[in-house]
Image (cartoon, rainbow, N blue to C red):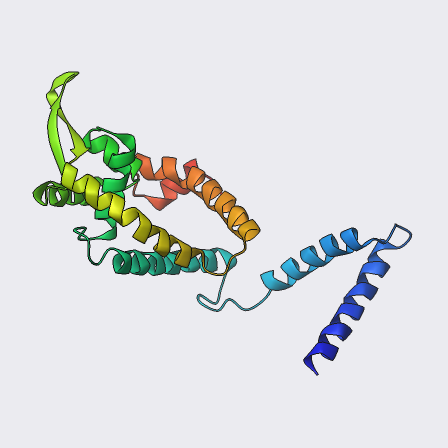
Length: 211
């Protein structure tokens, strides 16, 4: 019976499409585009399952959920490696790829708050995953680099982290992954400069970055 219900819905929608198009050409591609837009409009008016009151709140809630799912998978993937947290691995991986870098620059690359970032760095230094050495261009400063032990373990972690990343992407098709990545990059481009300014007053932020 479900298939007949679906066919009826499709016939009804086709009727709507033909009525909207009037004397314009009716083609499969234009119908597909119209149907996609029509379904998007339907979704936008549905009840929001998590927050129950706005699409913006729903997006924020789902992003929060995804962060928790991702952290859970990464922790499982790194269980037999000397990384106490997912951020320990992330900091080490960034340092491994970027080469020697200062503490502040590393934390900024991670878009992480300074105090928490310093705790991660202290832990990695203590566990001999990374080490610090004098900056040849600034005698007062120090740089960080991955140790031999750290390099061995981060290389091992890459393959495990890839498994976690595949789980995070779930059942998305390649085209859906590409579309999602573009959307996430767009959001990141908006939020990163705000985050780096370290402004805590939301009203000030919204005045400077109207949405």
